Amino acid sequence: MSSTGEAPLDGPLPADVPGSLRRVAILERTLACGPAEVWENVLDWPHIPWLHPGSFTSVELLACGTDWWRARVGLAPAGLGRSVVLELRVDRAGLRYVTETLEGPGSPAWIVSTLTPMGPAATAIRVEFFAAVKDAMHRRITGQAYLRVYRRLWDEDEGMIVARRASEAALAGRGIERSLGRRVALALPQTVVIGGARVRIFAVGAELRALALVCPHMGGPLPDEAREGCRVCPWHGYRYDEDGRRVDGRGAGLRRWTVRWDPVSDEVVVSS
Ligand code: FES
Ligand SMILES: [Fe+2]
Image (cartoon, rainbow, N blue to C red; front, side, top):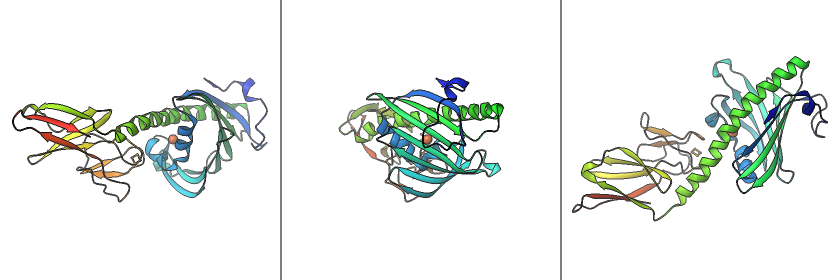
């Protein structure tokens, strides 16, 4: 549910929001995750241009500390060269975080997000947008623009949080195995799902190899195919070569799974 109606927007401002700002919109939705996963997501500033390329083009960290960061963030489309300086501050005890636009288009602005735990993997979030507006029309247009962007951002963030939980289980899985049938009938390369993990099966000469397409950084889903010899993680941009080795010096390589081939039965078995 969301609102740009006048009644809820005209309530009193939170005590810390500057009195020069007005509430321009409220977005309410339930996320399929707990508060700890929300904190991890919002403090993970490097994902911003990778996960949200439709909204942001770059991020440069300016300062950070426990539970806060300040960064210059490029705004899409890239050709316009626009950027904002954002500061995000988490108040875990208060189940609340603030995103303040310190510089750039739309500044000054505050976004106050309040969480209400609803269960082990359900959190209600209420996002209130505060901006400096000239009149009622400006207020409505600004509010609608925030709602449009933030609905999409939270769709993308929620997708990452849910996928991360699933891929953690896949990364941790041991002793999982699956028969791929007879080698003579095996089409290669191919991607199979084993124990929740996507695993790429391919041949290097006569040798069969199996590579987990799960980024070891935070479990991002890697593409089936390498492009120009590289797989790029869509969550933070770590890069791996076709054999799973890191190529940008960040993180570890991709996990190799074991492939056994029985020359008598011709059966191929992959195990974690
Ligand atoms: S999950 Fe962060 S780069 Fe892949
Ligand atoms: Fe995000």
